[in-house]
Image (cartoon, rainbow, N blue to C red):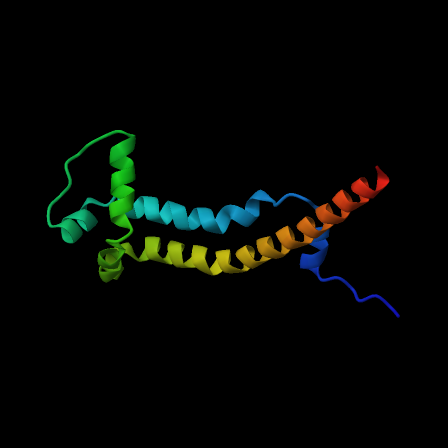
Length: 125
C-alpha cells in the first residue's frame, strides 16, 4: 500500500523539534496592540472617569495594562481615532489562530515521538 504524501505543515512539524520564532509573531502583535492601548490616556479618561496620575515603575505599568483590557470597548468605540491599533490586533488574532492549531499538532507529534523513544530506551536497559 503506497504511503500518502505529507503536507507542508506535516513536513515542517517532523523536521524540527522546536518551534520557529516567526510562529509567535502573531501573538506578539496582539500584545503590542494591548500595550499601545494601555498607554492611551484618553482611554483611561473615558473608562474610569478621570485621567490617571502619571506614575512610573513596574507596578504602574502593570496596573495600566490590567485596567486597559476591560476598558477596551471604549477604545473600539472611537474606531476612527484608533483604527490602526484595532486592525493590528485583529490581524494578530486572525494570524494566531492557525499558528495555535499548528503548535498543538507539533506538540502532539513530538510528544508521541518522545514517548516512543522513552519506551525504546526502557526496553534497551
